[in-house]
Image 1: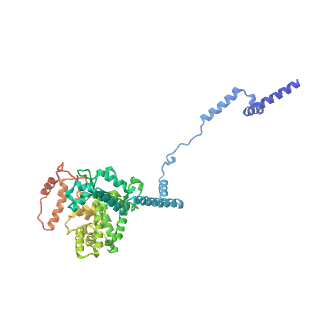
Image 2 (image 1 turned 90 degrees about the vertical axis):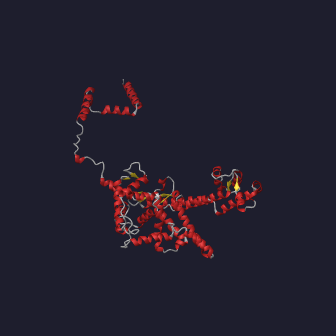
Image 3 (image 1 turned 120 degrees about the vertical axis):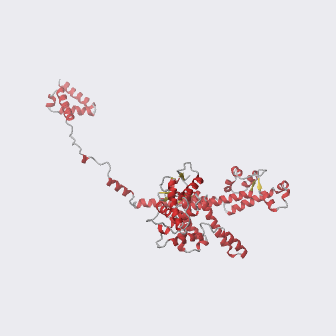
Length: 485
């Protein structure tokens, strides 16, 4: 029997060694647990474990009743203000260095981009080469042209004009003889834009003038784009270039330094001339949003009559400079040309005229104009109600008008037919702010005019006659509502 017991012990040891670790642990627990646990039956142990689970479920951890004062805050105004202040707090040195580096890299890349585009434009030498090549190609076809128009042989000017006509085949031949950067002007669509004669030819001189004018606009566009300095968040403008009032002031300041005639004026007057010149761009091309002028697109500036007027003034100054060393006859001709631009807004005479007007109205010499001082404008020809409405509706500083506001007023007075001037005066006339004028509004406005007429000793005019004339001229859809449009 003893060898058999030894065999069973050995066999159980082999079986336990072959069991997994969790089974061995369970057997070890069952072998070493107390006798009380072995004494209890399986049902008793199951009932005891069930009671313990039920007792834990029925007596949960008590949660104190929440009071109103103990409700947690989901929004803390103090914390939010601190976060807002921290968002505007100065950046640390590393972030500030990264920001400055990004701004510098952006400016450098932008300048390189503009330089690259400017280098692709045609130069004066390229324009001269284009004209010479075109005339040479047309001259090679001269015998055929002379056979077609023999009557023009004795008329030099007409013959020269006739020799400048070129057909599409000659147009393509001219393209092949010029550099690649000129090929963008030699497309079928470009050829079709010019008027043709009965033989399907276009005027070569007109084509050359168009190329010169287009290149001039492109050069001016790139020049204005370089002044896009103060425009915030350039990416928000859909990749277009815009200039703010500050950008335009820098541009005009550079023009003063480049035009010798402007450079001769007193340096103390330079800031006022800059305000004078820029104000016309802002008044006619920009719009106000919350008393802030909106940036102006560079393309809108280039295509405006105001920029054309500025170029005319610059040309007149260059003519005067060139004519300083010529004879008396040439001086007389050039003086006549200069007199044609005497009403130019950008002329120094015009700027001095407006500034002198402002100084004469500023009786107390505080740099701004009050309502009482503005009543003396143009010999007190404006009614008291008109001046009062201007100071009520337009932007003022402590109830007084500064020089820029006065420039807006002068532009609205001198350019009454322009849409922007009409909008300026409409805001003054719309007393109730309803967007239309009623007969009562017209009677109220004209009553103030009648008082001014009495001051000057003029015969009074019936307000009903004035109202009827206004209705006859405007022809409103509603006789009791005269709208702006």
